[in-house]
Length: 148
Image (cartoon, rainbow, N blue to C red; front, top):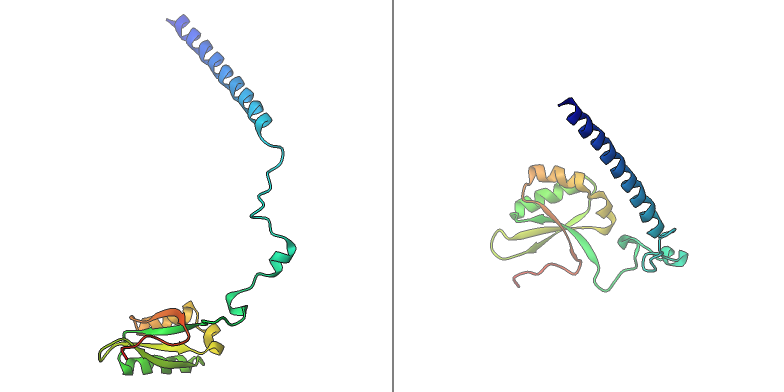
């Protein structure tokens, strides 16, 4: 019985050695097929001049359809005025614009371009605590579609 187990143990050692040798052989074979250096992809490599043309949208020249930041939602006139007063207290200039149909409707506050950098996620989060229905959108500066 002990002799049987010793043959099994010896066979397992040879099997382990064989698998190790096959693994080394495969690794050497794979390295020979691998390219020595990565292939250059022409679409991803940019010339130095092309990198200088990258601009932020806020830095780009004004387009035919400029985009503005609007804050608001489904408010009554009084709620829209309260949001406007809150923004004024934060030195953020905004003008109320009405959109939608009905007595409530949607009221949006158009944030002035000079104040746009002041409206961040922190400010919107604090406003959302008092006005849960508030939203922010970037839309065309030309105005909001109304029922007129």
